[in-house]
Amino acid sequence: MSDHKKLYNIREWRRASIDYRFDNPLCISCKNDGKLQPSDVVDHIIDHKGDLSLFWDKDNWQPLCRQCHSKKTAQENPEYIELKHAPTTIVCGPVGSGVDNYIQSLLKPNDIVIDFDTIYAAISGCDRYIKPKSLFVYINKIREFILTIFSQETKVRHIYIAMYVGDIAKIKAMQDRFEDSKVIILLKDEATCYRNCKNNRKMFNVPTDWLKIIKIWHTEYKKHKTPKDWLVRG
Ligand SMILES: [Zn+2]
Image 1 (cartoon, rainbow, N blue to C red):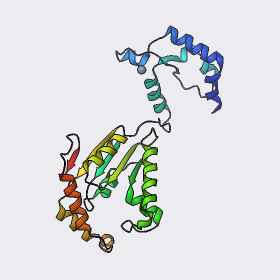
Image 2 (spheres, rainbow, N blue to C red):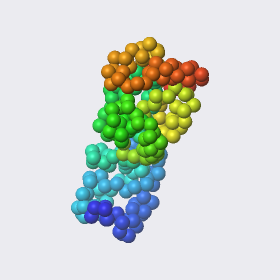
Image 3 (cartoon, helix red, strand yellow):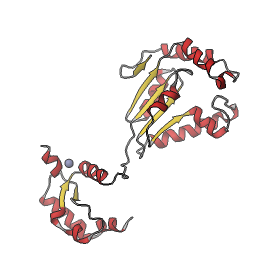
Image 4 (cartoon, protein in one colour):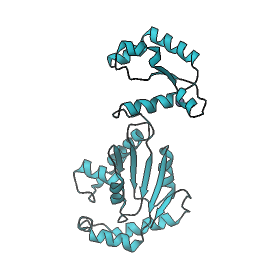
């Protein structure tokens, strides 16, 4: 804890804060917007940065609710990022539909991507499309762990999750794990996906029946109705 954070822990401040909020029970910022919100915090209008006279100067105090206080603090300290459930986009499609490229095109600083294939490549040291089977169970556990960490409150700006399954129930289950999440389906037809696989030399060199995998995706996907709030891109 920094030295001036300690100021808030001393008994005189806690007493003064309670008294002040008793006299000023409403958030002044919300009140200016015509809303009635109880004050939770005594805010220093000018950031005291440890300056004791500014800290104790009642003319420099104002009653704020927690939300308005967080907003003001964030504006004063650009490096301050609040812990929250990060908005999450689950991008699904068959191989060759361009899931990874699509995610790359949306990425901004402080975003993260959770992609099974990328984790596989990072751990195995192999190329993205070569997946040593013996590692599968471990990679699954690692991905599970990463998903658990980021489904909680974080400082991450946005989470992207790549999914190559067509099973709507599985995608829904993923959506349920992330509080503020939406789903985008890249619905490319089988021929287009297969052509993209063939044009990717690294994929083509792997002895995998990509067409079969693409067909399975489409069969699975067609089994159930797509939820109305999912975005489907052709
Ligand atoms: Zn407020």
